[in-house]
Length: 364
Image (cartoon, rainbow, N blue to C red; front, side):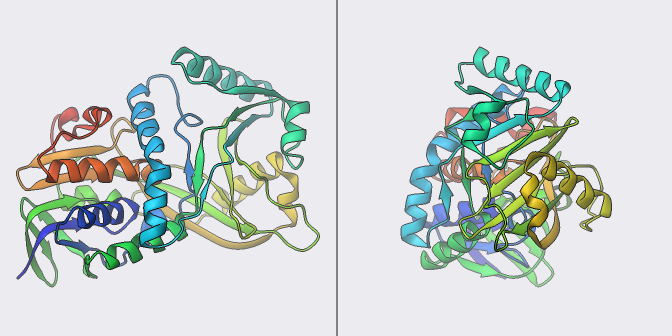
């Protein structure tokens, strides 16, 4: 029977961020995960783009994402000092459209963002070629200069190193249930003052009644070859025949390509259809990618919720939720960690977190 002050169930970007920040605040922390630093966080694209991913009706998610984005530079700076540089990029995002329907969708996005006071720059196809010469054939684009991106794998390694440096203990076992002040595992129970459920898509298995479900997403990683056109400088998101595609460059010449998303339960296999759709969409946006080396195909399970907002906050005395982040786990890691530490300290979390109350959908 192990004991700890704070037991964090889940070792993805959310769980590791919570553990590191809680340890920095002086808590004795244990992370429970059979494979910390893996899961959906390991196959993420790394976009930190609340504005580029905004859509009418999701104002609460936009506000929460923007609040977290504001915290990212300080979060990255502190993490670099404690565990290593997470590879934060400040180049911004380009959202491009190719046919009339895609351009109409982009126009809806631009109009919506203007209505909520978010500034974006509409770019013609000709100007787009001067900004990103490798992007061709687009009718129009939006330039979102404030968006960021991060190297997800460097981030995970940095978080693990920082957590270890701050005394976080890791139990590489699988949790079977999470209760107030108690985490049950196949190797025995872990008692704690507070348990934090940060198990992503698997959260509802550990806490039945929580409205989290798995959403499958496939990604490809490609690498530039000698003589081929270098990756784009910006993160590039495109609508190709209504399907979203993103390309996120890495400093080492790699390019992360996503993102399919569909209901498939807990299936993590990569399908031929998914790979084909990603490559066809990417070639439409950035034709030079056809000459790149394909180095990895992977699938991950995002933690979906009823409304794309995460579940953040008390489930019961001695039990906090930090899960259901949908496509925005990396983006919302700083604000989530700060909110959890605020609750641990008995203080009020950031105001934008209120909309993510776990009780909003009728139960947990």
